[in-house]
Length: 135
Image 1 (cartoon, rainbow, N blue to C red):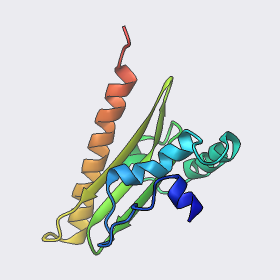
Image 2 (tube, rainbow, N blue to C red; image 1 turned 30 degrees about the vertical axis):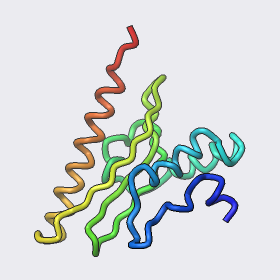
Image 3 (cartoon, rainbow, N blue to C red; image 1 turned 90 degrees about the vertical axis):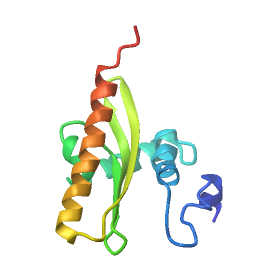
């Protein structure tokens, strides 16, 4: 309970079981900023998240750079989520994307469309951040 309150996660999941991308991102952000755990332990947990064998959703695009992330899906509700830190050189960026699929189409097609959308958004974010110039 102390961790949940300290990180502001007490409203992480609504009574109907849903979660916003803002709330989902708090977990990753708290590790990156070491706002609850010390820097060493936060970095250790991020290193474990970077070893995820899941290579779909957002992570498909970032197999050659560090990308500690947490993904999730709720097949019955057709919700697909991925949240992490893309370690763009000199510009790490936090990214969280939640997609509500279409239950009126077959699951495999829905998963494909949703996954393509997740990858497209993450490609756009990476492209923008990696080419952004402060000048």
